[in-house]
Length: 300
Image 1 (spheres, rainbow, N blue to C red):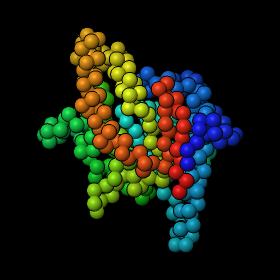
Image 2: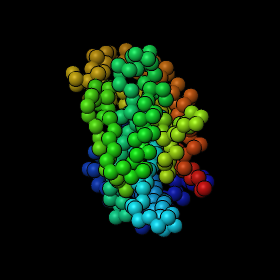
Image 3: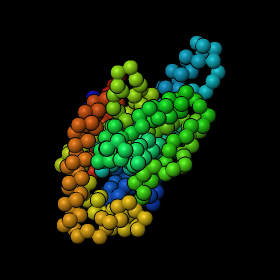
């Protein structure tokens, strides 16, 4: 079912805005122009839909428990968010993490990114695929599936590795603990990838999934803008893995970014990420200004 922005906005009904401009500034991604009007028009109706879906999932779980004579707590509700590098899916994930936690029905909301399940750089080097970081084969798929399966099964505490964007690698010995949340948000490039034959995929455990979409040309432009913004900020840190890029000329830096986009990110998007769009329960289609113009919702 396809809905215009105007139709979608009206589905907010009386969902309150629980976010301030200052809080939104903290949640925004690098060079992401999202404002409170976008939150009101797009994300408040989305949290209303997710809250209704969460309630329905809890009711179905309670019905099964009644049949079994089981009084255990319902399993955590798991939401997947997919999309390209630079499309804004991380901002979407952080926004939903904050907004959903302010609904009284599900105050315990955790967010995990699949970056945490990338193989360490040493492993990628050993396998000869450091240039394919972000492609499906660069992730420890079994560890990710096992993590999400344990959360869904109600294991009291589950641990995920920690990825450092500053160091561009997994942090040895560090872990993020997830303790039976009401909702777990799983955000990443390839979370809607189908599993190999006879195996489970991480999205087999999702209750709902969102794909953040835009034209490839627009995402490329956003990627280049973000790259130059990072050169002026995060890459200027001497501890950054990409510190050497801060010293390049504007022309050389642009050439480098265009090459990375063409050879890595655009290729991954076309070959692996975009083909999974049809598996999502909801697709947010963005225009060139980053605003969501239309929404596709799967009704079944």
